Structure formats: structure tokens, C-alpha cells
Amino acid sequence: MLIDQYDALRSKRPYKPPLNHGEVYEIMTKGDGRTMPGHFDPKVLGAFIDTALELDNIFNSHQY
View 1 (cartoon, helix red, strand yellow):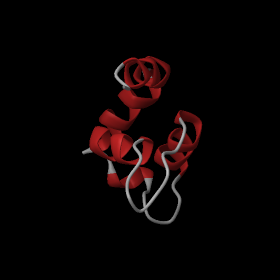
View 2 (spheres, one colour):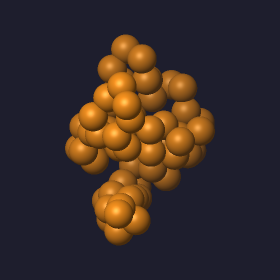
View 3 (cartoon, one colour):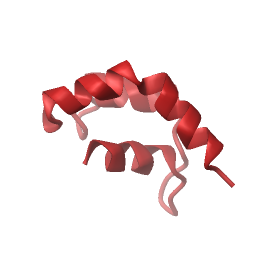
View 4 (cartoon, rainbow, N blue to C red):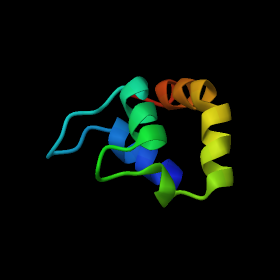
């Protein structure tokens, strides 16, 4: 679920522009009123925080 949310926020959609990694990281770790850190398993969120830069690199390397 967390990675699905990350991908949805990073990806362009017909109804919204894509967000950059920093914006998504802030939303996932601090919340924005719609997405809140409490929505995610704490261990999964911790793994996300620990590997956030690597995840950004992976996301960017798979864009076309």
C-alpha cells in the first residue's frame, strides 16, 4: 500500500501533475490531511524512510 501511494503521488495523472520525491517524502512522513503516516505499518514506513533515496533512484531509472 505504501509503495502504491508513493507511485500515485510521483506519477502524472489526468487530474494532477506529478510530485517530486521531496514533496512525496514530506507527505508520506508528515502527512497532508489526506495521506498520513499513521495510514502505514510503522515498520514499512521505517523501511521507506531508511531507503528513500534509493527508492527515488529506482523510480527515476524506470521513467520513459
